[in-house]
Image (cartoon, rainbow, N blue to C red; front, side, top):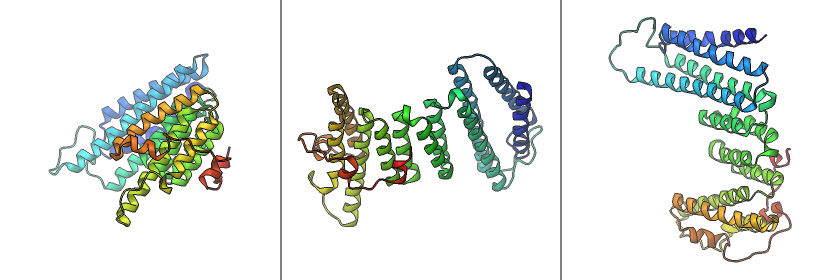
Length: 317
């Protein structure tokens, strides 16, 4: 059965390799070397799946295999770019045909290669012992974000939060950042943070990251007002800072241990320095704006204090 599985997986990639040779990416010798390396990876995975091996070894093998395929994808992109920049005709290498092909064929080759990497990630997370592996899911999410395919990224984020989120607060932080930066949905990113805090209400770092998220949104709003209305800098007590102040106060009332509250303050101070460097703002000004130097009453619930309704993603579990 293991041998049949190896041959089936190699047959799926054989057609792609032929298309890459026709597009002038590889010579026949290079294509043979690629298939030989892939056969070695597939045989290693087949042995690990059938034997009683450690989970770490299976995970590391998948990671190495995926890293190799991503390197192949980058090399294909580099060779296509080199062919595009060349101005004078080149002599084809031995075994390579059609060095100059339409851009449509190049997009097709790159698209199929990206799809192969997606399939490898799916094979990895479909293993029973790796379904809740945080590092694999994080790498999968970041690769999908680099491709820029939002239609594929969002289902991956939802699955990661469902399968790994209850055990990992970092999944929610990365998912929220990708929703805001790649998908461009601030409301969904806020809902992801709130959902994560329902699972991990005693995680000081996640609370600090959410406060920094709201601080960043406040700075963006101030920047838009300065451009559109030609107004001066808002004062620290302006309404624009109400949301990050509310989140910070609610975090302090939710964290039950003094050690967690101290950790929250330390993380928040370090992150405020980073945000201040990015936005060229004084970290002391940002700290004063969110009320670090004075106590404020916390609302009954976080959603009530933010004045937002419970989005669909927030209520999903």
